Length: 285
Image (cartoon, rainbow, N blue to C red):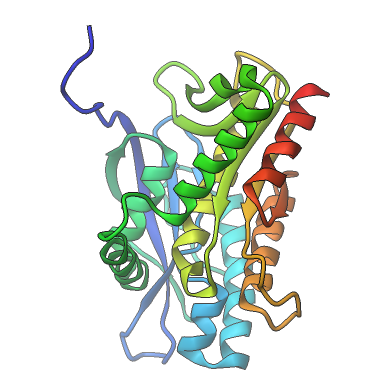
């Protein structure tokens, strides 16, 4: 019997924000990342502010340096909190970086947990998200969701047998984290994300990071079946500038860096049909 009540958010997690004080001793601090540890021990450390946003806030040179410094802090935080509880105190290795107080909450899955932490500890993220939600009010679905639906439609048109492998929700172990996976077929898994323009980078980065971590957890902590290849299929505009100065190109490079640290891959495609053909080829291999 189907219940009329929404699904209970039973994925517990704790987080602390990672802050920068741009002007020493001013007391003015900005959250740049969140350190999340799920109740079952899974760890994720998403950036809350993209490189593009940092450069718009602090200028080209200082913003780029700050983005690189943030990467180092995130790597150190991951190394420490992978072995220690979130409530233990860690000192950021870089000057003017600080650690926030621990908080606890629940969510439906890891992707929602990242969003909850971002909304509660970063004004930059929450403001950007509010603007995106307001813009969505005239549409029934986000650009990314529409793109994902078109991918599934194209796959189904080419091979109907694959349509049931989309949008799986998998609990990795008893009482553990729940992950949502765009497509899972035997030894292959893929997540989907898409970006309509450079103005959407901030929130797209958060969603894409969460999806990469979900793939990482699925591959390494799933006891039901062995996944050998995991990748993020990223839809990008036909007309985006391929030069190194392109905001979207930098966004892709940031995602590729995050993926490479976990031995995952990011594949950029410009049409849902191209993504569908790639999925069918991988699933049939």
